[in-house]
Image (cartoon, rainbow, N blue to C red; front, side, top):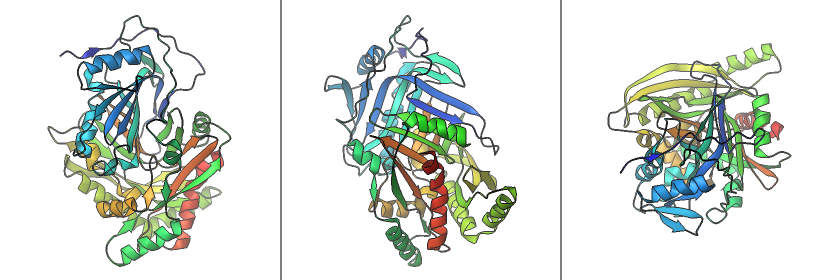
Length: 440
């Protein structure tokens, strides 16, 4: 069956209307990053990626036409009149479930910018064991997309002018309050648990996290604009999920894939910014001299390179240890590249990297299992960005906040190792939380 043809359309832009997705890089401190932006001004469809199904929610007439055309090619069934559902096998693993999601935009004849724009939740790592209603991701298929300021449209009819923008109501499929707040044991308890596991030799490191709730004087788009004005980051992110909004300034790449080149950048080791250039220099010197921070980065690089053995060839370390500079902190990072093995695709690459040691610990599999019994992260620690025919570009959802009902929820974590002390970790947590808390 032929691919579904999409047309550029002629719908006029509406100045001043917030988008439903934005991802920009206003940070080029290291050679890994260049200034760029993508923004979904309107969505044709929103897709909920759940452990048991894909739920397609049309956002207007154009989205309904897209869904109807997809139903001719997929075993979609109507769900509550306003949605379509594609069931996923209970026995399927993360790779198979992820492949079903990533196949959706490939049904269309469109340019290589068309694809999925949104985020995966942290629970994607548990896709095989997750409850059926566990949310693994939420994405928009664009109707109007802006790439570096240039607009692109995706319409079923050549002369379409549908404004779209029907409200996105996720309450039927998602407990929004629980999703916003997450859950977990107190950080002090998790620190003690981590040290016991490390001292016993069961773990080499663990990255526990905890949530902070604050009143929000702005909405998610307002927070996004504040962060753009106040900070530089490779992953300035915004997502409108109807009942919630997500905004952040993440320093951390999850992965990039383009033309078969797979890139990651483990980032860890933290020092607070100083009050002036001299104090900054002293903080950088302390960071580079820290055994704890060197150990953290070496552990994360080792785990990252091991993750690529399944999907990559010619694995290389381009940068072993470099300073990343942000408004509130310094970090150290590395740059790892590989060539994607023939016959594999972005689903293989994503699944092999769930999740980076920088946000779970090492060995990663053991750390993930331990965290699963004590934390519900949901949006925090997931991967935000886009997956298209031309490129996969995903940042890790940290230094971010979810806004809902006048409240903002942010979450911070730190890597506990044998070199850690409670005082060191508290200083690191305070430095990491500062950017979002001050913006709120």
